[in-house]
Image (cartoon, rainbow, N blue to C red):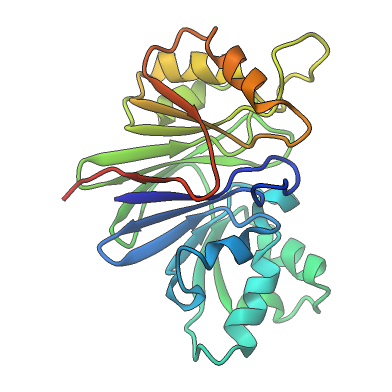
Length: 252
């Protein structure tokens, strides 16, 4: 299983990265976790737009889902096709919300290009991947994902405040992609996002192999986020997410 960080900027695209998007590949199957604003362009450095087999959207904030709208253009009008409808696993309101963002009529909306499937907690098979879905601690319906293949596993927090469900979802994974949006300082909202220290604490409790701090908001100093994480008690490998970084997790 191969993981590529397409976008890791939190809340809006930054100068060095689009918003959230992660590409997973195994057995020739390519699946995206989130497709935030700006990500569709950077994705083309790593995969042909005709070669994506499934998309999972953690939630419906723009920095996690909005580039599904221009992707509809690609799959509807480009000469790369014809395309089958692409499975999109997302919160139940995704078809309506994304059609409104695009400016389309409610019917048929984006469902000419995408086959939307409503997420709920549990485990499902998507291509060669076993995907476990857990609900996160965020003001809107939001899911984190655990993806396993051939003995390798990654977990992705989506957006979340402190969450025992995230610890459960990430138990013993090889790589945890964990949001670290805030600085560890007074005055930050609770039950919205994690800071670096909290992300590291979750990783330590879950016993993960590598912690990748992601959803990095451009107006915060990245080095400060990493310094905060160093106080979280995690003793494994830890690094900041970077657009274009790849992780070969092996597996059969």
